[in-house]
Image 1 (tube, rainbow, N blue to C red):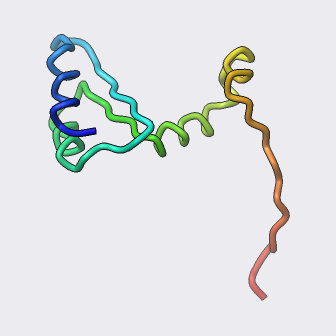
Image 2: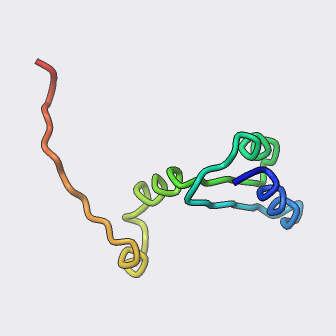
Length: 82
C-alpha cells in the first residue's frame, strides 16, 4: 500500500480521532515515513497482524478462536550446543 492510500485514511479521521490501516500485504517506505509524522495513525502490515494474533490469541473470545483456529505445537529441540 502506498502513501496516497494512507493519506486518504488520514484525511477521513478527525483531529481527535485515531486511524488504523491494516493490510495483509505491506506498505511502501513512503507510507511508513508518512505514518511517523502522524501520531494518531497506525499502519499494520501482514507480518505485524500475524504477530498480534499470536501474542494475544489466548485473550480472544471462544467465538473468535473458532474463526481463527490455532493450536500450540511443541517441537523438541537441543538444549545447547555441544
